[in-house]
Amino acid sequence: MQDDDNIEDNAENNTENNNEDIDNAKYLGDFTGDVSDIIGWNYAAAVPRDTRKKTKQNALKQIREEVKELSQAIQDNDEVEQLDALIDIVWVCVGYAFRANMDIEGALAEVFYSNQTKILLNSRLDTADVDMAQLEADGKEGLKIVEADYGDIDQDYFLFRTGTIQDANDKVMKPLGYEPPDLHSFVNLSNDNDKQGEDDE
Figure 1 (cartoon, rainbow, N blue to C red):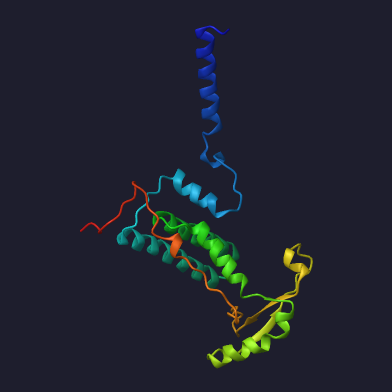
Figure 2: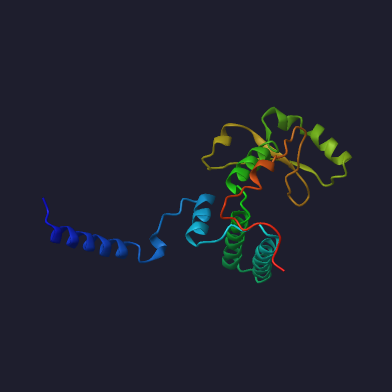
């Protein structure tokens, strides 16, 4: 059995080692490429949950600033700065959702499954002219059917023929059978620590 002095020395050494291990916050955790990493950063950065309109407007100002930087980087044809701006936009948008107590992870999953219904699978590609006719009747122009070419990409979809209807700007259109996302359950989340109510005068 260790005596009190040895226990105290070991505790002190462990504390010093732990401090050394986490002295640089860069090593607090590994990035997994998931939105949860950015949410975790907001917790670690002590970002407050605040659903007041003024706070949302400030967050929107940050998003606009990042979009402006992206626009400038495109103008300068600087791909590194474009990527930097895109990442910053993702970061501040997730931060907005965090502050506003929105479940952005759940919402992303909902939108993902919704967007899946924009994809025409196998024989649906062969009947896409019906979808195009409806879209054109709704005023859409310059439509085209684009079939995916996966090349060497290892992707589950590779087992199937897939494609979409796109407009002249390559925007993916909503075909017949498209299922819009329902995001109502992912907003208005709250807890006792939230700052809510009317904005300060």
